[in-house]
Image: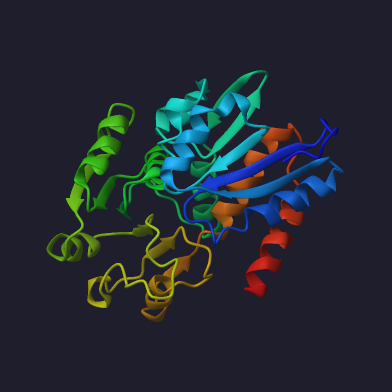
Length: 289
């Protein structure tokens, strides 16, 4: 927390559970240093009960802003004073800023996700995408794809209601999209994946070495598609390693992490994000891990 007697120090951080994989502190602290800001960014790994307690007491927390990651991107919303219109439309928040005495929620994930597609020169317009997972990250992915003109969007989740909530929220904004919901079962996955142009893993499966493959090798289509895993650590999770071995183009969550972080920095500081410095900080940590 703040040093005693120094009210000028700004404190930022990230809430999530678990957070052993995060490299956000390195990225943001490097950016603060560029401008010589008296600010630092830390990790606030909190289980659900503790997170809810802290959010109920936001008015007394000595923070200037924070990020929110799995599993709190939707859960944080009721505790905030205002929601940016885009974040409200998406239905998930990953960046929060203290503005005056109010806590305001934003979503920068969808911009980060689209930056990853742009890096791969992939245009969603008129194509079919499959998203594995229907949590807060999947909301940003679905919104970004619909906004960019995806033709057909198929969302898989073990809890179908979560996928239904996404479709219900976005269909009125994007009626031209063919929205499809499927349970996360092999008999549904295999035929749908054969028609996909883009496959996105928006679940945390793959973060840990012992995690199973989220889909079977035989389910991948024969033709080349883009496979996007929002995980960035490890840099090449088993899911992407398999897809790459089958000849598909692959992209991990590094660009998404970097660009959503850059936008969050700009929201907090009202300064242009030093993206190259942030990228180097990210690369340094990932190379060392």
